[in-house]
Length: 249
Image (cartoon, rainbow, N blue to C red; front, top):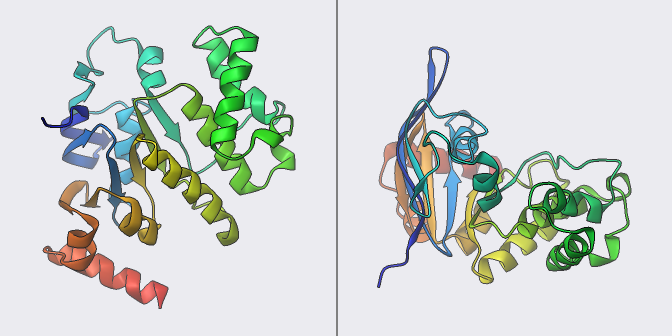
């Protein structure tokens, strides 16, 4: 039996004025799959993620989450966004709330949980990212890596169907990147469905089920990490990987 689709995106387009950033993107993500999206700056990767939870409104195309059209008129945006967790490059934590307060805010305000229930779920989410002992700390007292892990816990606490990561390590000092990738690795092992936009190619090689290469608003090529990194077919992907190797050298 085939694994059910969590996300089914077809013909997705997004224009900002006269500039078409997404030019008809198709994306299918199965339950428990980790899909990694790579490509040069300006290729539309972040716009794609922001369209998937309607932070940006697509210009055309369809997005289905668990079979439900999330672009349909009258769709409950709050309910839909509870199912699609999002972790940004900037941590977007409230500085006046503790780590636990940041994690439980949506549980109380959006999901209607009691404070006691929200605190129990929030504490468990912080434990999943290795920060249970920092529950009472404010963001200003946490490292960048710890703040990003709180942001991941905040999304996880809502038990989303799929987690979107938009360059989750790019704002971190290099020595803090590993702690965030370890959390993402553990999430993958626990069966969390994930779509990740990132420049962490070693992580993509090791953890992804499938890698999509985007360029100029289109998915140019997709395949397993071995296929994408080891046997690229398109000239655009070959040139992109060549550039990366020069930068790493």
